[in-house]
Every structure is written in structure tokens, then in C-alpha cells.
Length: 318
Image (cartoon, rainbow, N blue to C red; front, side, top):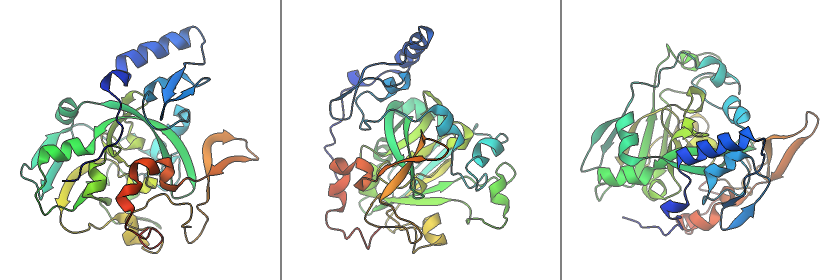
């Protein structure tokens, strides 16, 4: 099984949830807008909002996007196609009780209750860039645990090469699954190569901004792969299956010429209908002038993940 040498910080450098919450409350109480932090590879950041305490030791060097923007600007087609639909139309969705099946080419298949899963693997706080294939971006503070920890507990068999993910189907609670002019095939499905899934950056997120995931963000558990476009990070996961075949993925089935299996952020490979060279920064700019920045290869995580693709043609295998 591949091994990676990502420079993970020691546990003592990761801010515990209770420390973050108490520190944030104290900062807000005295009106302080700044908490000095160390992020990324030792870059000091002053003038960051209190939420930056979430990110100590993790890669993104930017301040988190405002919580109100992260929770109100979402793509979650199970609830609708407008960015506001997930927040407005997900109130009937019930993320408890919940179970996640881990099966396929593993020695120890198991059905996990979501709370047992969180208790077993814990929660870390990580600040990650998120880049949508639609050419907009955020910086999001997630709570969760490495997918690799769960996969290692399942003990992949020698023939396992890919990991397939399946989302929930509940049309009674998810109006976007009831059809209409635009509809994906349900359930939503996604996949990774096994080495991608085992990479220490690949996260199963169970919370955001120090709280459990809200419905519109993929409650109660979702995938986060920060060097890939956002559609790769499947929400409301019910099944994780190890397989020897490349699994089908929802957007690739919908439009294979537009959405490849790998979905790595690459400013040099345009979407057929727009450029990927730059991205709009959600929450910045003005009504008349959107803030933009150049898009980075692998969303800025090339130092950690480029080695996974050194033998590939990233223009053809996009």
C-alpha cells in the first residue's frame, strides 16, 4: 500500500475545539478582530479573523471565507440548482440517524453509525481552499478525519485500486431529486484512485466552522479533496466501496467532455465553456467588481500531491 510523507504537524499544534471556541468567545467579547496565527509552511498571519484559530498548522494561508457566505452559497443539486436552494430547501432533511457502509475489496467490511465513526476516528480542524469548476473559490475551515484512517481500518485487499462513493437518495426530503428540467441521475456517485483516497489531505468532513455540518453543506458526512474541483467532494455519503475498476461518477456521466474523472484543478485546461485561468473569490469585491485571482495548479497543493500524477498527461486525463 502506498505511503506518503506529507508534513503533518504534531497533535500539539492543532487547536482543540474547546480552545478555539473559548478563545473565539473571548476575542469577540473584547471586540478583538485579530488573532495571530501560523499557517501553511510557517507563514505568519496577522489581521486574520478569530476563525483563523481553526487553521493552525494546515496548508491554506488565506483567512477563512465568512461563515455566512460558506453556508449560503452552495452547490448541492439534490436540493436545487440555485446557489441559495440548499440553505433554503434543506430544512426537512434528517441527518440522524445515519449509517455509512464500507465494503467491497476489504478484509473487514462494516456498517458504521455516524456517531460511532466520529468517536472512533475523532475530528481535526483543517483550513482548506475550495475551488469550484465554475471558477469561484472559498477558504473553508472543516472538521473531520482522514479518509485514509477509515480505509486502513477496513484493510483493503491487494486488488483494490479505486474507492467509490455513493450519496443518499431521499426525494421526499430532497426536492432536487424529484426531477424537472435539469436532473442528475441519482444517487450521486463519485470516485478516487486508492492512492488519492489514502493521501493525508483527503478528508471526511463532519463539521464546518467548529460545528456539525449543516444540511446544505453535506450533513452529516462528506468528502473533501482540496486539490480537486468541488464537485468531486460528494456530500451526505452512505456507502464507500473499494473496487478494482474505475467507478462511474455523476458529472462525468452527465457530460464526459466537460467533467473528467480526475477533476484536478488545472488553470491550463479550460472548461469547454469558460476559462479556468482565474477564479472569483466569494465574499470579496463589490457589487460592480468581483474580486478575482489566478488559479493555482492543484489549487495550491502541488507540493503535496503532484507526485501522484507525475506519469500522467494532465491535459488528457483531466
